[in-house]
Image (cartoon, rainbow, N blue to C red):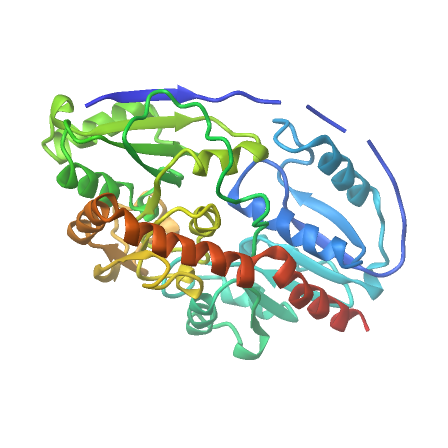
Length: 394
């Protein structure tokens, strides 16, 4: 096997403005390059383009410290952070886990935007949700799981999260990644049990061998195992858990570090297919980004992504069951709750199918791209969001 570790660069910073009156006070992650930040940026873009006045209260990083955003976008966010709206006449919207909801902030209407990845909610989540006037969740999967977890059904509203299909599109220049060769499967995730990295590696090394012209490109956002290095952890799993010597494994390339926002669509365009056997997603934004870039998508047949993925536009991985997250899971919050166990055997077969039947892979990917543009683009969903906010401001 060829195991490569590639690293990525960084880019610049911004200015200031003010106003008042009623509008939307928006609290959530904006900076840092996470999926939450990207989703919030798309929501903000859609709302502001439809005339909603926004006061921005970023959670976590207060500015674009890594220089991931274009300068004009940085300046726009700084102006929103400087604005001061009248809270008594405004909608207070916060996008974060319910334990992080600000329950003391009083406004005309309070909305909690959140999601979770298992079949119910962690202890203590229902109470802060029920303290909100409305709870907006991205998927029908979450409407069911939140109601099951004790959130009042009348508070729950499905508000899907779109993306900019002009930004995420096919035909862009690929990132220069000389370590890859042949048919490239891209996977993007944090190195945590829920993302099913172990299922992915198990399926990949059973589907292909060292002589096959394939590459598995792993874009790892976070790896936080104390005292361990990602490359060593991966090699140890292959050799110890799967019994596959390095020289007998197909090519794997690990891409670490943050990418500027403008480079993410080019990363998708560097691949031939996207694969992520996640054990649970409230929405599954990387699936949507890959589909918008017209990649064949291999995704788990369980979770929020089933709102936009189906058998005619993707390759859905069957389950070995819905099982309790084990006691040894690396995130205590999931332990004992039900999540999917994607079948590595079925995933291996799907990976071979995508490589072997390019025409069918292209057909499904083309269908997915069309649906992303027609149904899930931010411009299509922006009226839904804007009407919901404006209705609360009247």
